[in-house]
Image 1 (cartoon, rainbow, N blue to C red):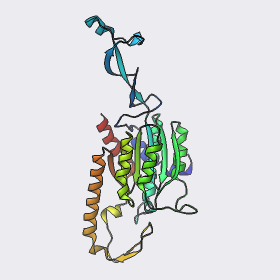
Image 2: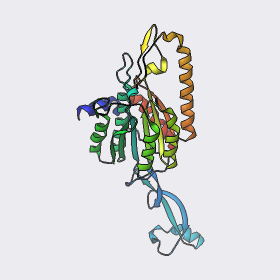
Image 3: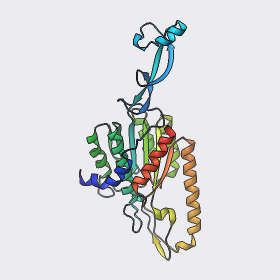
Image 4: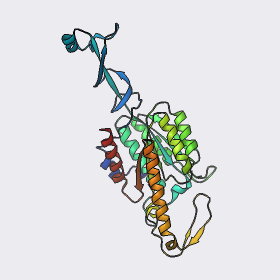
Length: 306
C-alpha cells in the first residue's frame, strides 16, 4: 500500500463498510455480471415476464409448464444483472482546503477519504470505478476500470498536487464540469459528487438535471467542516476568503444567529432540490468518523433499493 493509499484508505473505515454494498437505485448499464439491474433483457437469474414464442427463439427458454396448461408456447424473459459503473466527482477547489481548529482532516482530505473508500468497496465487488477531481474544470481524471489494481490510479487522482504551480486551485464551477461528464460518460451509471457545494451554487441544479436526463443515478455527499455548520467563533475574528474574497474582521457574535439561519435555509433548499431531481443527498461533517458517515449513506441506499 502506498503512502497516499494509507492516507486516504483508513483501515477503520474500510472495516466498517467491508460487509456492505454500494447498490444502484436506478437501472444501470455495465459489461460484467454483477449486483445491479441492467436495461437489457437476457437469460440471467431474475425472471421478468413471459412473451409468446417466436420462430427462432431458443427452445431452452420455453416455459413447458405454461404450454402444458394452455397448449401455447411462451418463452421466459429475464432481467440481466450487471456490474455498476461508478464515477466519483471530487471537488478540489480552494474552499475545500479549510480545516477547522483541532480538526484531523480538511474538507478535501475528508472528501478524498470518502471517495477512495467507496472506490475500494466498488472495486472489491467487481464494479467499474472512474474518478475526476475538479474546481472550475476537471483537473485530473481516470476512466472507469474494474481491476482492483485500478484503486491506485483513483488514489493518484485524489493525491495529485493542488493549489500551486501552473494550476492553482480555483473556485468551484459545477455546471460546466457536470455538463461535460453527462456528455462524456459512455453508459448510464452511478455518479457520486463529493463537494462542499460552495461557489457556483446556481450551477448545481442545471448540472444535476443534465446527468439525470442521461438516466444516471446521482448522489451528493455534501462535505462541510463543523465550524461552517456550528459557527463556534467567539470574540474578534478575521475571516479570510479561500477563493479570492477579501478579509473580513468582525465580532462573530453579532451575526451568528443570522448566519445559522441562512445556513439552515441553504441546506434545506439543497436537500429539496436534490429530492426534486431524485438524487440522493447526504451531509457529512469533517469531524465525523468517515466509516460512520459511509455506513449511514450505504445503509440508506440499500433500504431504498430493497
